[in-house]
Image 1 (cartoon, chains in turn orange, purple):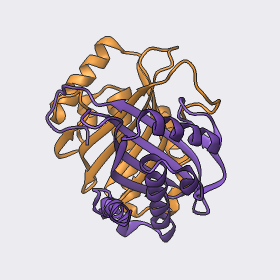
Image 2 (spheres, rainbow over the protein chains, first blue to last red):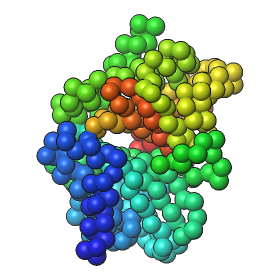
Image 3 (cartoon, one colour):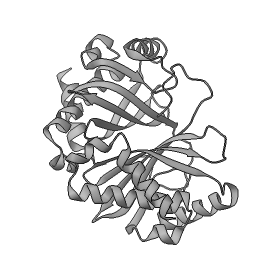
Image 4 (spheres, rainbow over the protein chains, first blue to last red):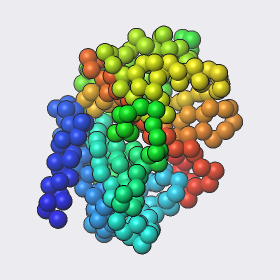
Length: 150
Length: 150
């Protein structure tokens, strides 16, 4: 658990977004930590209770596949636990601008598959998560360039 | 043209990402303007020459459908001009963190269709664009919540 947490912290610090940190306000710094820990607890540990401490007074959901509110996330994590218990998301980049934190993520539902590229956008108020948007694209088998999607 | 340009500037200023501007460095501010104008020139006006003044010493492309380098963008804009001359992308949110600018975009290839949600990530060096990632998702007909993808 500690190793995992440190791994995630390291990922956040070493992300290409990291040079940006010099320009982050204290609130942007704090928001990045909140979102990275929320993501780890929710999407990787699939622990709704642990993740929910980061919710503000609402959780407005824009992912068209998920129901609105914290209950929608709870249902989604239940689905992941049952259907894709080994699913794993790796945060590649973390950005913050004002009340927003943006994650660039490689999500793999079944080990050994190519998975999807995802960008998640979270809005925070007072250091708590209140809104979420995302865009999800399966990584294609072939690409017109050799640079990869990350 | 002026109206269009002003429209884009207004969109950038009024975007929900706007409150963040107070915390932006001067370079982040400048980078946002560069990327918004690059996007307008390239994706909406489909004017490769006008867009290319914003390139740095390289343009590393991570979109798996596009060839690497400025030539890849040129070919993509040619494709848009020929196949989807009325295609139009609206920037919904603009974020900046250090060397990176992130756009949340609603792209419609044919008027009247739902289009796609896109997040574009640009890396800049010295105020010039040198690298691009994106994630693209068609907007589905039905959603599990009423909040829309933006």
